[in-house]
Amino acid sequence: MTAPREKAYADAATTHFGFRDVPLADKQTLVDDVFHSVANRYDLMNDLLSAGLHRAWKDALVTAVSPPKSRAFSVLDLAGGTGDVAFRLLAAGGSLTRATVVDINPDMLNVGRERAAARGLAGVTFVEGNAETLPFADRAFDAVTIAFGIRNVPRIAAALAEARRVLAIGGRFLCLEFSTVDVPGLDAAYDFYSFNVIPVLGRLVAGDAEAYRYLVESIRRFPPPESFAGMMRTAGFARVSYRPLTGGIVALHSGWRL
Ligand SMILES: C[S@@+](CC[C@H](N)C(=O)[O-])C[C@H]1O[C@@H](n2cnc3c(N)ncnc32)[C@H](O)[C@@H]1O
Image (tube, rainbow, N blue to C red; front, side, top):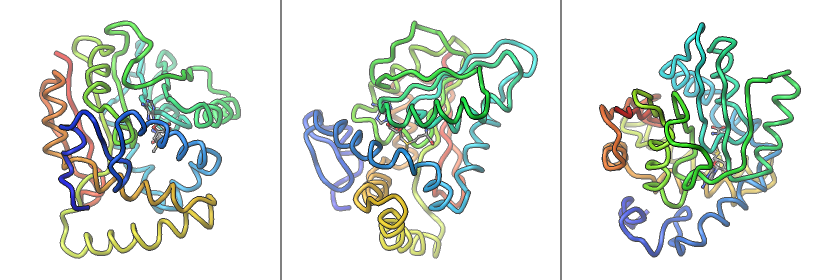
């Protein structure tokens, strides 16, 4: 809480893992442990902790992508975990919409594959990979999305550069991420809920209070939306903008490859 939020992104040697400063090289392993631990309860916990609001936030992202109904459209969902955003993109698009989920964590992907099979979804592919070094060709996708993933990636600048690289010219990048609550009253209630209720629910339901403490702390360490918009511009995105949702609990960031 004390260190500047932008520190991690200016300092090459260390970064944040929640409120701890850790060597940059160690963060990914720590993050992977968190999502290994919570993978099986991840979707249930999202509903519980956000009182279902994560659905509305993801729907706002999908509406912004607006996959066409009647022509081929390929979308890459970075850090796509259990496939939630990809499933919504497929539901919004037409029969020629294809979604690729890339995530570094095989446990999250396995939950996603099971969910896709249970729904009989053929238009989604799950790929194990690192957002910092994507295993895809330049300009391969019409849109790139990432929901609640970017703050977990150790080298955010590298991930943004990769997102732009694999985006077609004229394609849009959309990033949903926790942000800065700026509504008086809501900020205090949100802090109380975050630090007192979420870790307890994490322990009781997912059996891991520490994982959910990381969730809360990592949100506080993520750059404010204007700083993140600057990182997107630095990565080469054009027409960068963002829109706060639910009093700033979340922001939907947008940029284009022109
Ligand atoms: C909070 S979850 C979000 C999952 C999904 N996007 C959603 O909104 O339900 C964060 C995801 O980021 C993934 N992740 C963390 N670091 C990553 C990296 N370097 N490359 C790709 N995925 C990563 C984690 O494995 C995890 O599945």
